[in-house]
View 1: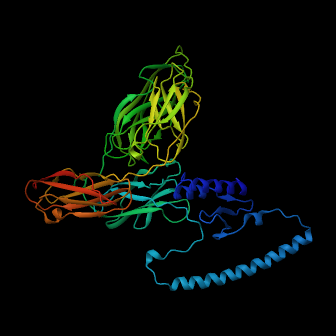
View 2: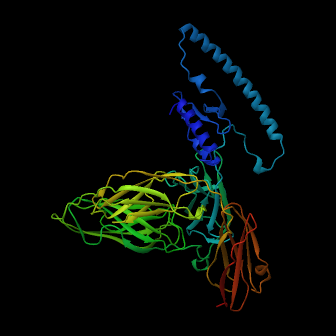
View 3: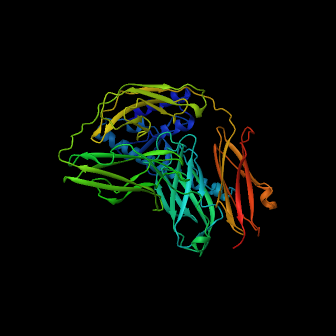
Length: 563
């Protein structure tokens, strides 16, 4: 991309923003991509607010005109030398003046009264960051962890305008980075939420502060969240239960039924469909790993797509049959970020036969159509329906692709001619394509279908609230952690949690958790002192920015007598 192309693209982005095709955050993110580097190694970018050029020669960003600096100039040698001497003299003068100004500004800036949180350096770099809300779901704030035992830190990133600006996530303990994950290949275009799992091994006793920090490629952090933990020499059985448990259930073999015959060296794409039957969302760090059997040309582990609790997902691995005939198997299982295997054993079992039929890839579907389904314009009811004509009789399934997502957005069985995409948002245009495939490979992409969604006004619906308690029962003098998560289309203001007739004045008085944004998560740890068997009832409501309240959420906690 050259200067003229970048400026033309900037004008196009301005037009899209002016016609409400892009919001301000999306506009700034797209402008930030117009970063150029000239032959001298100088970086150039356009300020999203003013439309003027900034350059960075290694000493920070400053306004400059690339057309003047990069324009070719044909001059005789003597004129060039004189011009060079003039530039050198001017540069020395400017550098001297800038140094004097910098010293004066530094002295005046240092003399200004300000809190520690305000003491951040000034920068001329155009602002392109988008705030990201970070929520730490586990461990609970104020909980105890054991020395030398690995701690799984479960957190969630959320931004209504998307997570594309996030470059990496760091896990810090007392300000020191103990783990870091890159997000560049994980976050998809338009993705607004991402669950994360990171591990930390406590090596010192006492209190510590654990922080999850989201960083852009350059600049200040986009968001962070912190909790306090206490590291003690504690036995496993006295530690609090995790806030969520990973689990999975096998649904079906989408491709390659057990005992299918293949010719030697044939390619085989196995797809298992499983359901996330646990309480943890599968995100970064969750993998499908080989635990038994032959490798068959496949990697030892593959990443698992983001899958919310209760949702199904298709797990695909590409194999190659061996050169020798016989029955071969390869067994796989899901693995959490802390290297714990869970869920069913998933097996590929095929017969390699010289006489096996030489299967050909299927033909592509035709006449693909994309239409907006009937319903109101609320974000929850938006969906795009895809229909096509099946032109092949040997496909195992169809993959559905959307231009703004790198991976396929769905898998439908053989002979299907309908798919509904419910992950669309107002004011966007989407391009779709379909690929039919079997164990021998995939068809060419079908013709592309396009659909545009009109802008819609958010509805002021009441917030929704999920309330859980960990552990589900507790012995007297034990600690329980109340976990609540509220969502609202306009924004959650607060969540109020309290007991109902528990006999504990502090619990019945309750606690108010302040919130900002469309997603709010919070915890409340309580140590109960009752010496008799009883049951507590905990109730919570969420309130949004317009004053509407969620339906009350209730949970009961059995309190067992001391052993």
